[in-house]
Length: 124
Image (cartoon, rainbow, N blue to C red; front, side, top):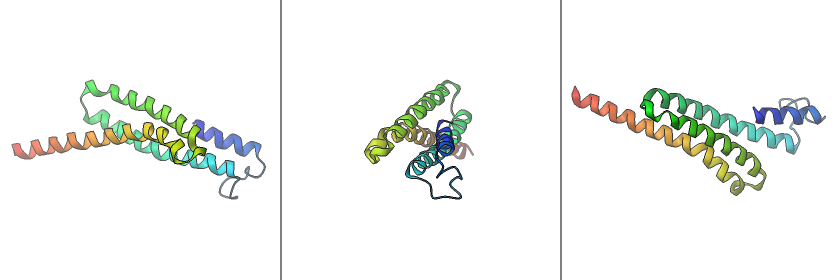
């Protein structure tokens, strides 16, 4: 929501960018906001999928992990945005806080489901 608002506000107050990305190349600031928004969208889609699968597959006692991952996601996005203009080193911590909990959840779910499948195959 914040990333969308930043793009919208920038476009509203910048005549060169008011027509939108489809009609202009955009100023460097507009491109920066769009890059952060695009990365946030990509991360959010993956995170929401991971959280949903986690909620279905994992034991009830592990559901708090979703809240922790979501808080890390928000903190990561803030740090990623703040450090973006400093290049890869400036984005690294934010990216890690955003992505690695999601990756860890997906890897854990893959192992749990694989073990369940193996257990089911052995019982057959």
